Image (tube, rainbow, N blue to C red; front, side, top):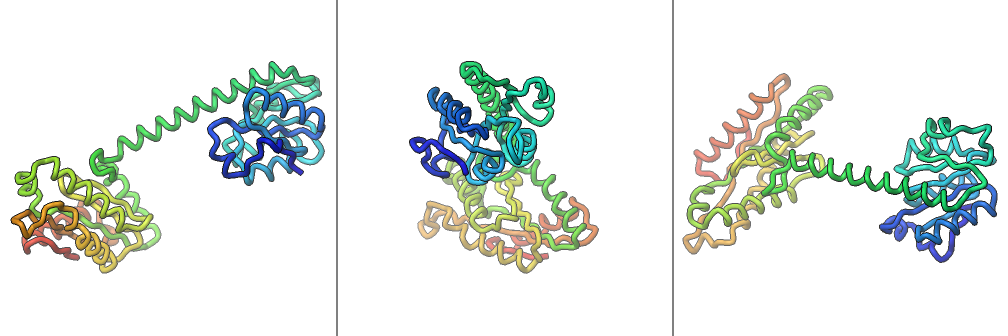
Length: 316
C-alpha cells in the first residue's frame, strides 16, 4: 500500500499541475522511508512514499513523479528492476540507495538507468544536494527540449496564419503519397486562392489583407479533421492535404471552407466593398503520379475555377 503525507496529498490533478518537483521515496523499511520523506518535505518539495516497487509502479500509473528515490534491495520488485521499468515508460529520474555498498556498485546503478547512487546510512544533507543536482539537470533538459520544439515549429510554420509553411508542405505531401501508395488508400489535395485579393489589398491596405489571410487560416482549421493538414503555400494561396479522402469527399470539404470564408471580410460588399471569395482546385492522387504532377493538376483546377468567375471549387 502506498503511504503518502496527508498534508501534501491533494490528489492526482493537483499533483500534476504543481510547478514544484514531485518526489517518490520507495523503501521497504518504514523508518528510513519516513525519515527521507520528512527531509525532502522539510526543504519544500512535495513527496510521497511507497513500501515496495510494485506500489511505486501503481502510484506512477496515476501520478506524475519527477524523481524516485529507491532502495536497491527490496522484497519482490527490487530497485534495479524498478528502475529499468520506470526508464522504459516514464519521464522520471531515479536515485538509488543501498546499505550494501560492497555488493552494489555505482557503475551498475548507472547502467540500469539511475541518475545517482547513494550509500546508507544516508546523510540527508548529501541526499538533498544530489537530489537538487538531478532536478537541475531535469530542468535544463526540459528547457532544451522546449527550445528545440520552438525552433522546429518556427521552421515549419507560417508566421502570419500559424498554418504550416510551403517547405513543410512538400515534405508532408511526399510522405502522404508514399503512405497512400503503400496501403493503396485514397489521397486528395486542395489548392485554395483568394479571389480579388490584390484589389482588396489596394483598397483597404495590407494590414486588412493580412487579417483576411489570418481568418482564412482559422476557417480552414475549423473545417478539417485531425488527420488533415493545411499550409500557406504562398501569398494568398493555401494547400490542404486530405489523407484517406476521395475526390467527391474532398469537394465537400472545399465547399464547406468556401461557404464559411466570405464572412472573413469586415467590409460589406453591398456598400461597394470588395467581396473576397475562394477559388479551389481539387484533385485526387493517381497511382504512380509524382509530386510535381499532382500539385500541377491542383493548380490547373484552381486557375480554371478563377477563369470561370471564381467563388467555386472544381474537381479534376
